Image (tube, rainbow, N blue to C red; front, side, top):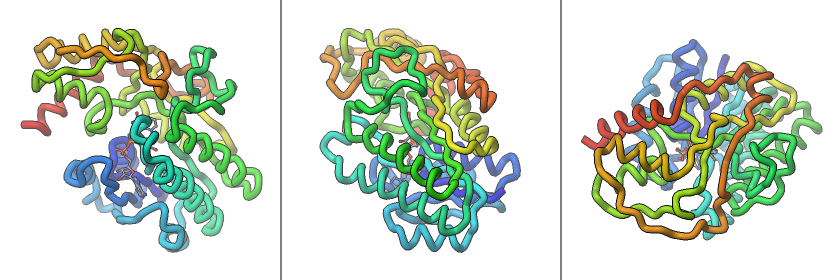
Length: 316
Ligand SMILES: NC(=O)c1ccc[n+]([C@@H]2O[C@H](COP(=O)([O-])OP(=O)(O)OC[C@H]3O[C@@H](n4cnc5c(N)ncnc54)[C@H](O)[C@@H]3O)[C@@H](O)[C@H]2O)c1
């Protein structure tokens, strides 16, 4: 199959593209090297797979509707894995217009190009943050998700409803994947595993919310990739799935594991939980298990050890 992977120089996109190539698909990898972190890091992600004979890399911005339409008309993709986005909750508070342009307009440009070019299957990344601070725990896809705590999840809710409208109007087969706290090798430098590892290694203080009581459903990258690929293969009519681990970890335990790996105690600076953060993320993954045979395998201890091995390699 010929598959477009957007955000393919990023954390999750680079792993998805690499896995698709390894199993025999043709991949067009698209990214614009957005400045959310260094271009060098994204080029290092691409260097892991983009010279593959069945891979083509295209530097393009999903906000550019004409360019995106031309790419779809030229390549005639069988399927799309749309993972490009601005993805940091706290940064989104001060940058809502940029998030709306990349995440909402960018996604609509891709949906529109898909329908104009006859691409029938569209899988896209959403987020556990669409649930806000729901009291339906674990989070389940049938619960309401219309009270986001920041612009970032608001844009992802907009993508979900836009995708639904394209499904109804044009029979585009759309699957939204609500990722829960993804981590692992090539992890984003603005996310907690990277930030805490960096700071503990350098003996600098880390900021810990709500006395270390918040819980997060950390999900290892290989498990997420298996879910994305299962969704591409399943070709559902219109579905939304939680992709999490289904086992939330309390923040204080998460810090303990990193301390163990680094071999040093963290210096802790306590802070209240910001209003943009829920106390818990916790995925009910029954639907993904049933329809995608999604079975996350990696424990937090095993996953963070793999993350740390990568971290040490790139920081040598
Ligand atoms: N990492 C997580 O825990 C997590 C959780 C929930 C949802 N997600 C979603 O998963 C997807 C991938 O996230 P990630 O963690 O790999 O982030 P990432 O920042 O590593 O990757 C996103 C990629 O998209 C590219 N991009 C940004 N704007 C673009 C544009 N205008 N045109 C083309 N490319 C553009 C960036 O350059 C980057 O390489 C995103 O949609 C994100 O919202 C991630």
